[in-house]
Length: 354
Image (cartoon, rainbow, N blue to C red; front, side):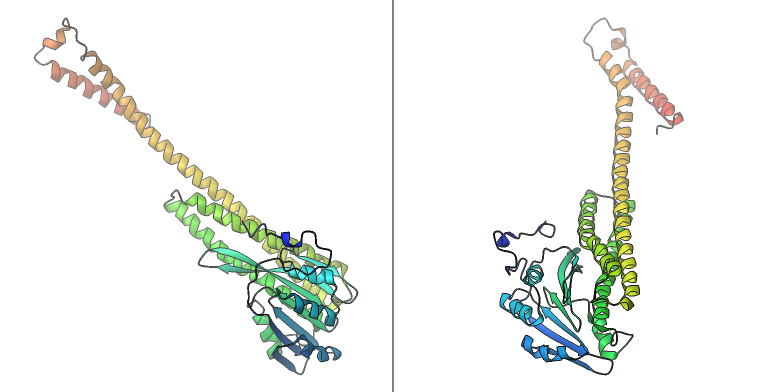
């Protein structure tokens, strides 16, 4: 349940712009990684101090500074002073309960997206907040933990593939958002595999655990939808409204990401419909099983009603019953019982009740 509601009571009563880390601390040390490139050269190295990247901002090349670990308040204040980041933006960076959004400032554009990971052992989706601060010559990315889905983007920068080396900071921001959205399809593929396996199990051998499995997948889809749905508004805002930080050349690429986001949302809704159908199928199978059991029990009870009636008559303690003194009375009663049972079975068979 903590994935849906996170505590932010540490900020209660604080003035706006107060830097307080809200969320789980996922890494012990903060890691700074620099990528500075243009069409001809690439500089890539870890940084010990933020000041090491400042001289590169004076060039026309693209500077990408990635920060893994956002719990260090003093470092965040340091970055804010050197890059001119508003305290309210830093406050949002430190608050990992933010929904995907975008905010335009005079000197930069702030974007929040959710990067998702799938735990195959627990069959659970986890979310990590990624904050992007897009300036004219720099891009700052803040992540909660080490490890991301940006490896293909880094490889394209290193090898100079495509237009990323000449696209500028806005194209780099698009590429990172696109990588995050593409990873949504990987998550959906794994969820789809779970759905297929569950559907086969329901068809072949449904058991009492099926309903719990259905609810578990539904919870994952609700969580996934909560992370993805607001991103549609973010991409639409960047695409339609535009800002000085996002050039017109990036517009077609943002439309492509928007289409992928809509496709992701449609897939999630389709999976939810499939889950509802699977639940109805499971309950229908259980109902049919119960009906079959009740049918058999009803037939057995119906057959024993006349037998009980005959046994009840001859079980009475009246001395004037002539059949009690017959030599073949016992055999006669069994013949009556067998005749009644046979007749009822033939009747049930003709009515196709059995």
